[in-house]
Each structure stands twice: as structure tokens, then as C-alpha cells.
Amino acid sequence: MDQPFAEDERTALPHLEQLLLYLIRAWVIGFCRGLPIAERLDEVFAMIGAPEAAAHLYGFMWAVGHGARRLLAVDCVCRPEVSEDERRLLDVLALAQAGRSLEAVLLLRSLITPPAALAAGDSASRLGQALAAAGRTLSPRTLQTTRYALADEGNAPTLH
Image 1: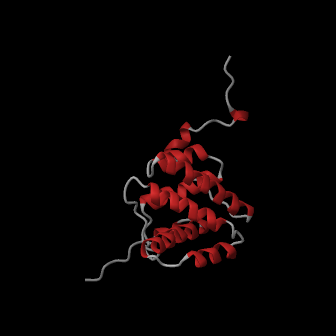
Image 2: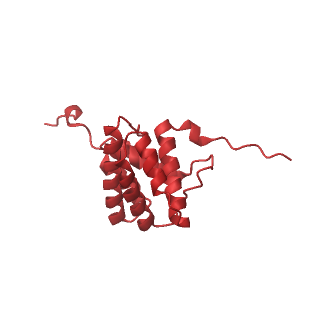
Image 3: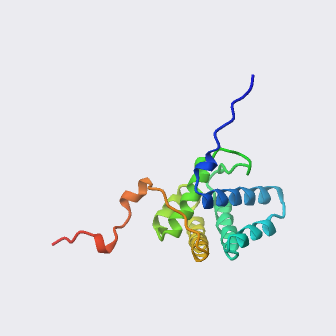
């Protein structure tokens, strides 16, 4: 009997998130198998006008990989599903780029140790800045932590 094809969840992601998911997956495969993928990742970031972003992705993934509290579900580049761990990593990158570093670090701490979360958060912010400088922006999803985020000072209610 024929197996139905799984819906490709990646196509529901914005283009930049699809690209970052691919790069995260490629980095993990390269790291785990000892494959020289750095040059290819550098080329991809150069193609989108953000060559300096590659170093920040490496720093982000190194911190995540070395600080993981458990084995994280990062799949093969050909897998159509997006794991919950991969979704969280993409959320972290979007939050960091949007200047919501506290939320990004809190989300990271659900995956990795506190010191690694700080290092990964810093790299995520730098990656976001490099992408923004190239005109590439991520759109952070509304997360459970969003309702607890600090209010913008201009919109904060005044208490007397």
C-alpha cells in the first residue's frame, strides 16, 4: 500500500526561516558527521548579502550543541516536518532580532544550560543584526512568554 506523503511543513515558513532551518540542519549534519560544510554555509549567507552572519550562526549552534540539556530534535535537510526543537530555535532567532533578548534567552533555557543560553542569545542577536543589515528580517511569532514581556515605555500605564 502506498504511504501518503507527509505535508511539507517547511513551506509554511517564511522564506528566510526556511533558509535558516536548512542551515541549522546542515550545520548539525556537518558537525555530527565531520563534514566540511562551513564553506557552503558561508556561500549561502554571502548570496543573501549577509556574509558575516555565518560566524554568528556557528557561534549560536556551537553554544546550543555544547549546552544542550538533552538530545535536540534537529532533522535531516530533506525532512518535511519541522520539529518542536527546530521551531524553538527559529523562534529564538526571530525574538533576538526583534530585540526581545529576554524572551529569547528564556526560550533557550528550556533547551540548554543557563551559561550556554547567554552565549547562544548573544550570537542570535548578532546574527539577527547581520541579517537586518542585509535587509533580511524575521517575524517573531506570538509566544506564551509574549504576554509577560516588558511593556514599551511609551505605552505603559502610569500608576499614581
